[in-house]
Length: 510
Image (cartoon, rainbow, N blue to C red; front, side, top):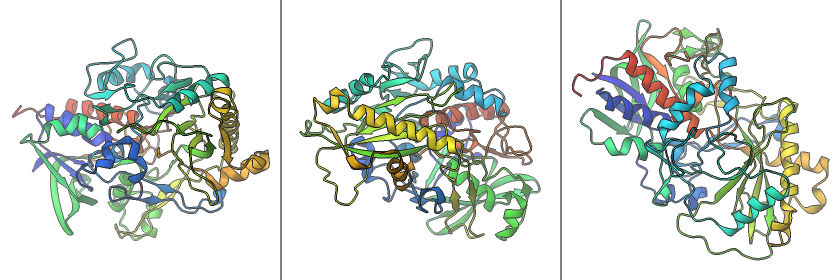
């Protein structure tokens, strides 16, 4: 029997596994997907090839009533590295106020001052160490990649529209327009798996099993003792002193619910015996949102270099009155991210309005007791008017940026979708609901805190009411940070490792 079973080798799971190995623990790591050998994973210029492919769980939401009943695609990584092997590899810690808000929401010990040293420990930043930045960590963070001149124009257009230039959005403030900081090494994606786990993959204390899809947890009384896992079509039972669930905001609640941990009424409705009644499991589901605009240039830009990222510039702006963190994060791509009928896609950029402080909340539920049946994921997007208002302001900012001289005059930029005669308020509201999509940042379904609705203890990462089980991934975030969620997920992996090591009796063979 192993010391610890870690479920999923994603952004948090890879970190936890590495840190436990370093502490002398024996670890069994279970990853539902396979190796990250697909060349489109390593080349950020081929990002779009990954979504809907064999390394994607290919999830879809339930029909969204505020978006013309569309089912929104939620790509999630089913591969070593998890969604860090599928995303744009953008490294954003979030605003300082995001973490102070977590404390107000019940996550004791998660203030900005308390998490900053861990963020500095994580990173190997090519800009050097400072009050805010670290350079001795395992994860490369860089702005040293080929800069497309179109992104130079986008950056300058944002400044011309009144967005301040910010040389380091992971430093003193997040506000402004910036060149993205990416997880790259030698021009290729450098996921948390590659940074943390791959260098120690041959450690004799590590048992790594790929193609291992966990169905449910095993119990002895009120204690979790292992997992039931499907490997190559065969169900196996594996045991450990502790289990760490790091499967993300969509699969961690799935495993808990199929194990009988969750709202008693829902579990009974789908025919699952209740082991622990935790009303918060599957609640609080929310996500960042994007609304795309297509902008056509009257001339082509230089041919893409190998491994040149398709997204290089983004910005953060606070429109919401009284907020101490941004509610919008527009992001820009030098490829068409959508293909509407009848639109010429030659020389087209995608400028996306972005909502990063959503107030709308939804639910994660099981469709049945069968683990193979897809769950019911309803983020209830645009349910709160504040979210609609933030997206309206972000869309207006996108239109303003597209019309600024560095784009409109130097490159002949013009918005082609929505069409120029459909930029009035009513038409833009319809465009929002017809085309709103995910920013790929789902969180919150196993919220940490100490109240009755919380699922996970914010200090120990243990599931309330269950022994031998911890959860450590984006599912425990009380609210989504105002930025991409990969860096905060790695933060969670580091802090969970600290907690487990502090409690454990590891190191007997170290």
